[in-house]
Length: 604
Ligand SMILES: Nc1ncnc2c1ncn2[C@@H]1O[C@H](COP(=O)(O)OP(=O)(O)OP(=O)(O)O)[C@@H](O)[C@H]1O
Ligand SMILES: [Mg+2]
Image (tube, rainbow, N blue to C red; front, side, top):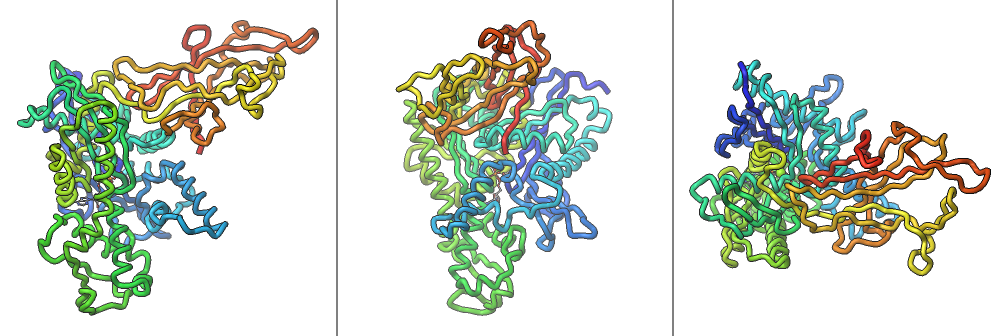
């Protein structure tokens, strides 16, 4: 059967705690569909919870000798060696710096000031190292199970022949704060999971959620709620993080267009931190001595204790609507204690206690919303009309009630789309349906400064003497590591006219030297970028290298540093970066034209 120009777009939201997949095919002209035509995979294998919009992001390779792999809902409280929160491992930079902090703190005995919360990814949920597998391999194994399940579904829905004939594109979502390396790691894991797609693209999670929520509003009965000039804040409250992003509606017809109104923000205060808060509360409630008797595996995610807390958490509305009961592990030694509300090992919590457990994360979320509103106002824009809340934590009634209260006090609307929990994967599909340059989001803001260190002729009194060096061929004095910033933090990056910036490179080398040269792309998250690369706030994003070996030697300039000295070559070329859709594309330009390929590598 001929599929015409029909395409199948698959949106993959690999979340910290849960992952989701949505899909939709275009019509025969390749045109997009309405958001309500997007389908969601919900028949995840295993005994699941009643709502299967997403599947747990967990895998276990099992115990020897059988090594039976289990994933998602197939993992039970008894399953050993569970890899959970593996997404955080794709961002090595955070992990390394935390480990370094801990190591230093332990070595120096200075444990004070070390936040337990900061150690979460290496705590009870930190995946045990698995021999021969790195973070990308483990994520790839998990995503392979996802892909197999999704493809079985697609095959039965479309039939093998039609499915084969459709052009398939996978849109993968990543946190807005992901480093370039973490994005690269995610792409590697998806590639290793062998999604049979013709195209793979990335979009940030809050952007995807915003696209879905807005499209749904625009296509539905609420279309009059959004008008040109309006600003809105999207808050994606998930398992690991709460991410925020703000947009301004620049046009509603003939096509709908929005642009980022403030630099997004976020923090680690998602629903797993409510779980942590519960455990800290429990320790205080029953006392440290009793708490310490509970074996660690009985308080880890997925244990009976945490599963029963999960149920209470998900249904919590903020008020007294029935007793909330949790069976305590026998090991704590408390069977009955009237003062502690424990009867026959069952602890009963009231709404006030539950609110105390929720409130640190909710208050932080409200602070983040407040911060986004302040940034929008600082940018000279009008007060946002609406806060849209999505995500697993975002669908919680108590959280939404608190956000609504906050908004009501300020004359702002609080909204949730029809499917807040699967908003990200649905939005990824919307993004894929749009096509690369015809997106709803017309302008994004640079999240950091981007630049490159260069050498400039040394000038005493202006440059720092430690940066001075003498070129071995020409004998000229240079100051190295002087930053040339190409993109400023907060700079507008329009989609229709992508920002291009080039690094001018000049290399001197001997005929016998190898011909690979490059530059480093440096980032800085501070408001004001430093002048020198040696400054603490500047860090390497990636190394970009051009292979000059294919350039005929006659194209280089020849020179000698003195009579009789060995001849050397000078090559001048450009590494051109295009900032497009949150990604950077590289080109190697020599003698005015594109020449060969550029390789990009990320440090660990
Ligand atoms: N109704 C609910 N009330 C409170 N928490 C909930 C509810 N439903 C799901 N959660 C929690 O939300 C989290 C899952 O949300 P979500 O799937 O949005 O996160 P994620 O995508 O895995 O995380 P992240 O976006 O940070 O990577 C889990 O921690 C889960 O316990
Ligand atoms: Mg998420």
